[in-house]
Image (cartoon, rainbow, N blue to C red):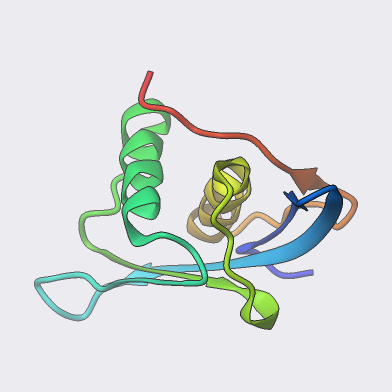
Length: 110
């Protein structure tokens, strides 16, 4: 197990699908940090980062943030928000998410 990884469970029709979300948060070498999301909506990632900053006190302003959904899957379901947040938190704190953990849930602004 490594930090920055968490498993999502989303529904595709009536079938549950497991997907690994990988996050990498690292110090930026430029004045404009990079933000990349592969297989996940860029704007949802921005909202999740803002919520993590506001609610948990982590500042991502000087950090590059990369999100990848393993296997080329595209996660459109908002239930993957919590998984992405946990992967980001895991990466920024360098704490491993237990491999028996599956996360799902929408993250709102409130």
